Length: 330
View (cartoon, rainbow, N blue to C red):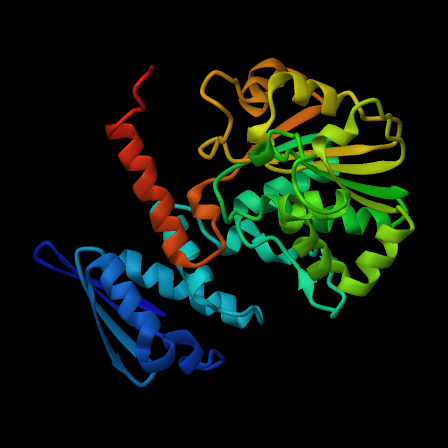
């Protein structure tokens, strides 16, 4: 129940918290969640049992956020700081978190039986695109789940016998794709560059299962350079860190696709490590392929970041700085 009154130009909203909602979860430890809303909306929240009085120019907005949080708890979902921050971000854009049905879809279950779900609207659209299209580009900043979701979708496709193997590739750009000077055998040379892909695999499949499938060559984790000359049928193929490919490498990778295969390309075009005289294959691919109907380009944004809230602030700060201080051309 919500009641709104106006005192001059200042809003005042009275809100009754449903008795079915655990107030300690809604308000947070030592009312941490309420204090966060006060800071975000510049309002004052007065609490008396299950009654909240919200005062300020954005009291209605704050009440809407609290109602969305209550609905999350009523649906049996966990309410954490990432989700609260995301509800606030959507609210500012006039979007209801609940109406997006973000967390109703299960991608797959981890080896521990934990369901993996999209956490943001952008992630949900990314998952839908991977299901519907044979080639999908997931482009966005760090922490938006581009790679993790792609790996989870690949594992799910394998478990459902939609594909016979999973191929994970990454450009070893830091070594210029010339790994011979590094110590150790081939696997020891490339593992540091492929570690993020292994981490996602281990989390979804479990380390033992992932290693066993790797030994049987059902799962391959390889540098991009080792994809040349291959044709991959019945495979789920992922190219990670694609912003660090050249246009020639991107074309080579995309043309490896065989029958009954699916390709997902992920990358962050704000973190290109190529030499300045080299064009990014990911940037060029979006220009070349954007009109191909069977290919989907999914843009994830800073609001889709599912890491620590500071990651989102770091990304936003860098974007603002780069707009004011564009790189100088040589």
